[in-house]
Amino acid sequence: MPPRSSPSERQRRLGAELRKLRDRAGLSGDQAAVILDADRARISNIEAGRIDVSRNRLYKLLREYGCPDGPYFDGLMAMAQERGTGWWDEFRGQIGPRARDLAELESRCSAIRIHEPLFIPGMFQTEDYARAVVTVAEQDQERVGGYVQFRLARQRILSGAKATPYHAIVHEAALRVHTGGTGVMRKQLLRLIEMARLPNVTLQIFPFERGAYAAFSRPFVLFGGGTQELDSVYLEHPLKSVFLGDGEANDQYGKMFERLSELALAPVDPEAAPESHEQRDSLSLIQHIMYEL
Image (cartoon, rainbow, N blue to C red; front, side, top):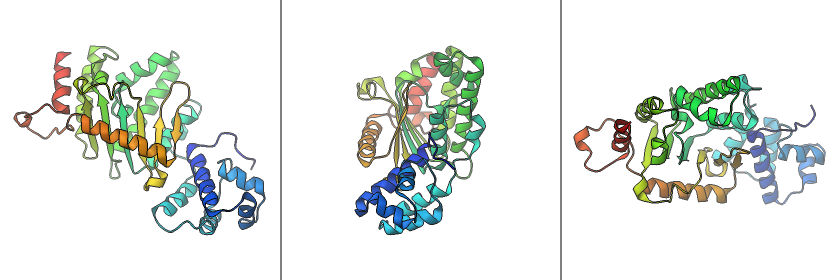
């Protein structure tokens, strides 16, 4: 099979980790090729994600590179075992490869942390709200419908026996913009409270009075990879979204998220009685905005 021209994010990430391990072991591409009884071009293609590496060959490389047993070793082996097939393949031809990469990463990550300053996160969106958001950038109604259904399908990771831990920090501005109109926003805020009731979901609102720290930072998503070495950062952009996998970026965005969490209101606790809200928290702010609609 010839090398692929557009590897998935999983394929790119596995290749990048192998390149990192090979460099750390002080081995050249030619030496790595000898380990697999292959040529140098095959190693280059594996490290670029252009061709897959079998589990047996990956195991051999990891041992020769000195990768110790543990979560990192197991995580790399799991990435080779996966072949990228999933429910998102149903949308091939309708949804771009970056969006499918996002869905695949969401399906296999250990936890998700997201900061969203302008919109309700996609995992919490109602169908009407999602349609209003997508329509801003896409006029073709058939494509709009595809993107909306894709976004709703992604939400399945928040429910079920293996629901993914999800921590969202949403700026108050996202709650006050009347995306889709008053009726759509009221139902969306009700849905926000409903989703916050899930045991795996933590929702915090960043209020205006806490300053411009969140208002001037970009949206980002942190994906837990099961071990720190395999964590990822996702930066969404209208022209080209970016996945970052280097440790420095993970640390910087991780610290930014921690700071946002400290400054934001206390998480939504829907089980708490109204009289227990001695200080304003995320739930009381959502309710206040909702009743103003």
